[in-house]
Image (tube, helix red, strand yellow):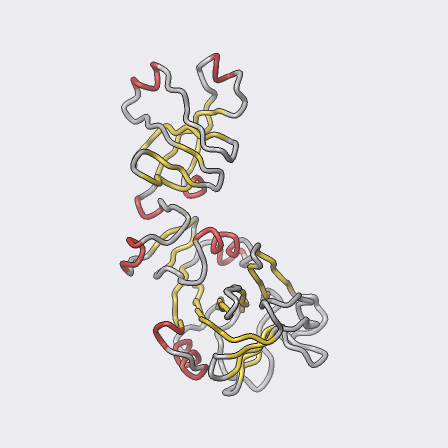
Length: 272
């Protein structure tokens, strides 16, 4: 494993560490910048994310640096090159190889969410999914806009599901389900289901215990949350149009920019 001594500035502004003679004697030492968002940058670009590596904080030996509370020396053990990321999907991520972000493994990059958004969302998943593989089973870019196709691609995946939607106003939102998406005569799912929206910051709407209207699938529509004649999220059969309303199941705000919206893109991920 590659071991490097890295210097991070705790403020959001990028500041370089003042190298000492002891630093120069360390062949593994490199000067980096901290951008305030968890990304480390060196002369050749992004190095690794702080939350993907184990760290051991050591006190700084320089008297000058001891007086500066914003500096500390951190020793990192980097597990592997795939765990290093810049916070956005790069062209090298499009190779189809599994990507690692935190304890999550994605078999493909998402075209709707950035890495940091996926990490935020993953914190609301059940504990059993802290270490899981995200498998992209459906997206409108490859499969077209058809609810029947979505059901067909989910047929071999009996697991939790994450639905990501982008509307015609570029707003991203969706639902987490503790079951696969399928045609059903009744509502199904569990209380660990939730709705979410990035508007632009993440808002998560959990189960209110009012009813158990988590997921309802048919040939004509797919719905998440209900009660009082309203759906938290409703998608039509051709996956071109949708609707979001406040519902009793999740007591959510509107997920989309407007109550009725046109769908720009959909991704469905199987979480195993």
